[in-house]
Amino acid sequence: MSEIVVGMADIKISNNIKDVLVTYALGSCIAVAIYDPVVKVGGLLHYMLPDSNLDLDKARSNPAMYADTGIPVLFKSCYQLGAEKKRTIVKVTGGASILDDANYFRIGEKNIMALRRIFWKNNVLIDKEDTGKNYNRTVRLHIADGSCYVKGQDGIVVEL
Amino acid sequence: MRIQKLLESVDKLPPFPNTIFKVGEILKSDDYSVAEIIDVIKYDQAMAADILKISNSAYFSPMQKVSSIRDAVLFLGRDNLVRIVQTAGSSRFFRMKGKGYVEKAKELWEHSVAVAVMSQILSKKILKTEDEKLYLAALLHDIGKMLMGEAVYESFAEISQLVASGRYSFLEAEESVIGINHAALGGKIAEKWNFPGDIVEAISFHHRPDLLEEKDNKIAWLVYLSDQICLFAGYTGGFDGLAHRGINAIMDKFDFHERDVELGIIRLVEELAHAREVLGME
Image (cartoon, rainbow over all chains, first blue to last red; front, top):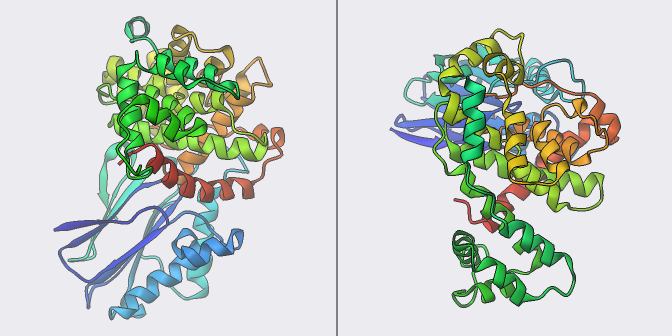
């Protein structure tokens, strides 16, 4: 088993059943894990911000920075390895916020909303979700069976 | 009881390396003397070793090995030298063993460097200048956590429970269980080290600059904002995660907008990669 680290603003794809894709320290950022159980292809995206209109140059050099540019790349890359949309399982985690209604620090919430909008437009259903709250998360996606584990509050690991 | 133990541990801390302030003072003048700087650095062996190591790092990749402090000072140049001296001098306090409270001292250190880098991005944007005092305050803002970890790690479960209940911020939970929060404890440490008053306040109130009496302490507000942005981006150094209260007043104070926070995150990712190379962090 080998761990492949997905950095901040990064995407990793695999069809090697020995691989585990992992991303650490999701604050307000979001991890999208997708998996096709038939061909055993999976991908993990760690995006930081909702909308690429903020800095289009950045979006071209690193689409994984944003929801609207990162999510299409994640799906297309998996399709190239044989995954099919109708079989793909989608799990989402992250998007934490600080306490109180500080209306200028809504990055977590905006990241979640951006994702819902994109999935809704493209008829993608979210199978499992663990978002919001105010702690950091680490996510692992096992390519062998698509199982997905989230380490959250107090370091407790739960299967998503 | 726990407070007593904590305050005793503040007294037992080794002194903060004078070198940082002395070098900063010398470098303030435009025609600083290299000999004077060497005189200060050579008595601080840990610092001298760090400076040599960084000068020979892949980032600077000198044509020839830099083997003396004199060569290093000439080679690095003023701006690099200031940052490297501040960072090397502070890093030693994050090598202590962190128990329970700070899972890994290395992570807290990485968070600290991220906040320091973010503080300069914000300072350039908001105050139109970089600020060395701000850099140091940002670098050491969480120093209190290192001692909290040593003295009260057994209280950690209790703090965690209060935070999980959703009614307490991490800071409030610390106060309720231990009687002091890590920011205030950090302020005590900065006081013991005879730091300037605005740095002491910035560390003490880095989660609640709105509670400061001196409302115009820009360092405190900028450390707060830098810390928050790093927590969003995922550069976190402990269990507190995002369990901190947001203070809306900061946006008016600096005419700052949500968009600026997001742009700040993009800059942070870029500049931190650069800073890590300069500072020779793996």
